[in-house]
Image (tube, rainbow, N blue to C red; front, side):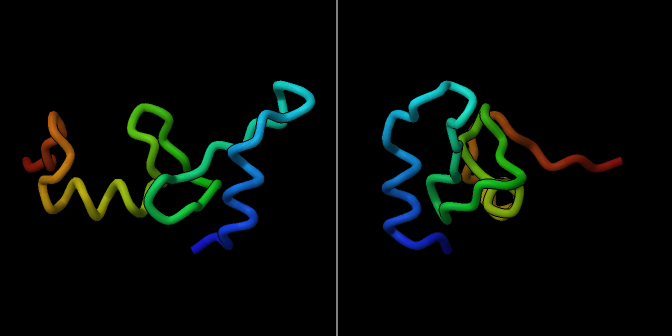
Length: 61
């Protein structure tokens, strides 16, 4: 879990566009971020396995 100060700093507009830090809205993690869902890979997997993300199905073959 990211500290609230670190998360708040990531919400500010950076001086340069390449410094944008995208963070997971659930846990605040910045690595392994999926832009389409706004989640990190860990939170995405948890929510997808529970069926809480619309349009995402678990694969089975």
